[in-house]
Image (cartoon, one colour):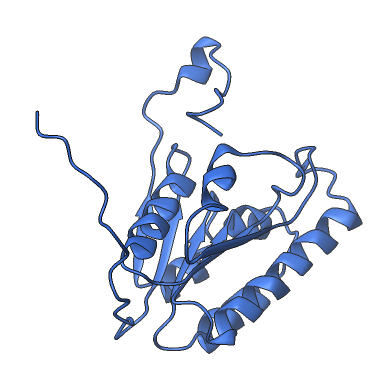
Length: 188
């Protein structure tokens, strides 16, 4: 097998001629993974990427460890270590989601990034941590050359309608159903 070596330097960035709105949703695994794949590809082309993690504030995720080392990629985390209980959403959790949306809005409108990922924003919408109108307004105001990616289960029909690309991950079989818990390095 031929071994490949990394490129000596990143390609010169070619700005996006048109940025789209992508949505990764559904009950299957792979929504964040797909978005981070786009981030990795974009960074490899010299594009500037910013990721806002909703509801993943104090937890350590493997992808964040490596993202911090990638040139041209920045991120911000919001939320708490405990999972949000959708039946008992706390005001502090709503406040964290609002702060995350403000950070995402700033990134999208700043002119500093080519790709902005709002990870788990659809869950924040589905669990009423955020109002739909504020997110739709952000999509409407998105500059033409910014790629905006929204991930998470429960993407509302209104978000699906305004998106250019929608992928639904469908769970056919999952090891959790046989008692296998989330595994570091694979699932988080």
